[in-house]
Length: 159
Image (tube, rainbow, N blue to C red):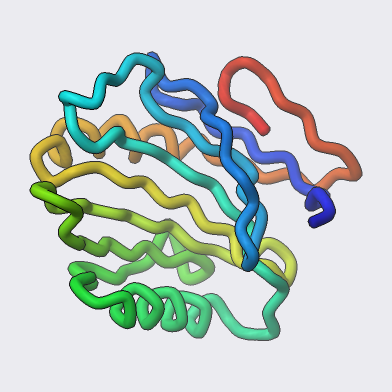
C-alpha cells in the first residue's frame, strides 16, 4: 500500500517508544506507541495507534457510526461513550471488551483528513485506565497532522 502523504506529530508519554506495526487491509498505520519497558506479568501493554483509513465520501458522523457499528458487531464490545473530540469535526468513542481476565478500554478519536478517516486509538486495561489515560490524553492533545509529499520519522515518536 502506498505511503500516505501525511506526517503525524505526537509527543508520546515519557518512556513510550514506537513499536513495529503492519498496515492492515483497510488503512495504514502511521504510528504505534507503547511503553518501552513492559513484562508479560504486567498484563495488557497499553498502546496508542494512529491510523489512516480508506477514502470515504461520508461525514465524520457517518464514519463514527460505522466505527461504533464495527465494534458492536465484534460481540462482547460495549460502546460506553460517544462524544465530540475538540469540536464538530471530530468524535471520540470509548469501547470496552473482555480479553482473557482483563477488561480492555479502547478510546478512539476520529476526524477526517481530506477524504480519509484519521483515527487515534488508545488501548489500556480497566485496572490501569485512571492512571494511564491522563498520559494518553496529554499525548493526543499534541497531535498534529501535516500534508506533505514525504514522511519523516524522529526519535520523539513522530512519523
